[in-house]
Length: 139
Image 1 (cartoon, rainbow, N blue to C red):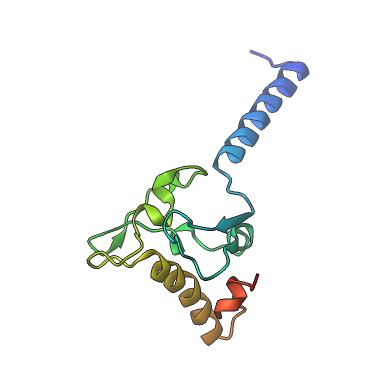
Image 2: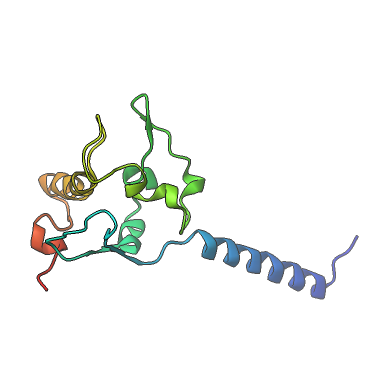
């Protein structure tokens, strides 16, 4: 069966529209405001503006930041990394206080973010903020 130019164009348009829609559905906003008011009722620091776009643009694998551990392995299903999925929020596993071997939420944020930034700096690579006021600017 021979495709006409019109059918080819229509097929390409449909494929492009589907691809755009899928990328829009799974995309995260470029900047995420981390402001866990339900967990930290008496916060002493300002919310954190996290540049998800910057981290995605640095070619980091998703599993470098996002994790679900079982028997010492990160078994995260990356197809769950979609905006609005409550299961991928840090607070879905990390509560305000340490629970068993699981870190409390604030310690988990600090270890994940500052730990990575410190490791990069020790290797002489460009890194992100490592001091409180660099993530939590004064009001």
